[in-house]
Image (tube, rainbow, N blue to C red):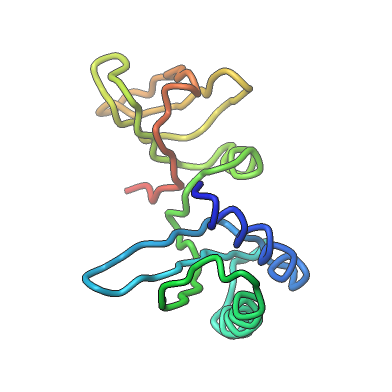
Length: 158
């Protein structure tokens, strides 16, 4: 994470958690000629509602405006939103929450001929995860070393 985002995360996390919500992710991106600071927040159980997002947006905006020096000197648009149903799996708390859930995993290199797997997370430890995938009509357990995982997210099963 870039240094300025780490400073922002450290400043806004208490604001978000004091409202019984959690910071899921943040990103600073340039689209066309405009910068965006996107902050993804959620609330467990049941997810976050639009009123809570609006309230948090105001509180986070005030916190960011009060920071000296300004961690983002260029003008930007602040966006707070829910991570959605396919939220990323970023930290250990997310991985624990994903147990039993249907997830999407992308790898740095092929494993058993594939770089992408979707299935139910059965087991996990510090070294690996076990994913139950479906191949046509049969189910198979795949063991994936965690260091090979480029990214993971919750997924919708069809």
